[in-house]
Length: 485
Image (cartoon, rainbow, N blue to C red; front, side, top):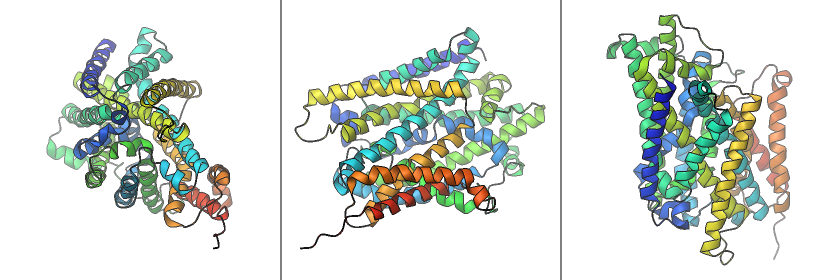
């Protein structure tokens, strides 16, 4: 597929995004930017979350990693269902009862300002790095197959992508994102389905051949029962539940759209229906991975050492123009959906949790608008800087990178919210940041030296739970003595 055709597809896609943004952002004020005027239809939010949660990491990394880890990634996905049930039953009622805009405002009322800022800081760090990793993956593919051939530097490619995202999120915020994410989820799924169709057409397969090929694949093994292995089932399953709670229920980026629904009941419909859809979609992605490896074997094609380049290489060079267009459509949807909401939610958390923009009488509407505009620009520049750091130092598989980041940065959020919901009494607010910093350090040491200390045991997703437990233990030690009357 020629670079010009790839670029034409991307430009056409972006034109539709701009039209959606233009329509939805008319007369959009701060309430529309932060919470969509609390009028978002639950079904639009649920469908839009597909693109927001899966992003370019799932679209590129998961199919490629099937050759290394088989279908074991589904063990984590199965755990997501339990996590989403906890979000719907416990966290959403809490957020709606308190009528929160930033979910970290809960920490202010429960513990104090230092705890609120600590929770927000971990979110800001985690989402900035995670979004940069996702966007870097997609941008690097576009760079290799399009702009590199024209001698355009990577920094120009990324700057253009971030600039485009900035344009359609700058004014409308969440009100715009609910509908752009719905549009992007549609094209992300189309990219997967059309890619599967293209593989079957190349191999002259019918429906029966397709149905039998996936379970017959040597990569279709799901469960790992070696308790020392990083992908051991119970570690992955329980860890997946914790990942869903932390990376969705305790993540401003994912919850802000949920809080824009008309009522708690609609928000719960959204999260429960999404929990089913996300399993089915991830089954599609690992099945695509198995089919890609079957295609490569049938055609005698080499497997690249960088598995993140496996799907792009086959789609753009070996599966024909139809598959290339399908891949570009899916990747473009994944690229924009993985980063657009991040600019809005990072801006929201920074303005509310760090600057206190929601405090009565502190800022008027004009000042609030100016603050969010400046913050929006600042986070776009920061995102560009982090992506360029990835480009300079290289990477491993991005799916592993994102999950590693989650283990270290979402653990403190898990501990803060878990302790706040389960335990009683107050803690010494000024010392909370110390407890939240020590826990990830301990977890890093466990992951680095655990195999030596524990007879070959490798920590996987359970590290996130341990991280949260260490924070909760720290809060227990920092508790204030009960007041006597």
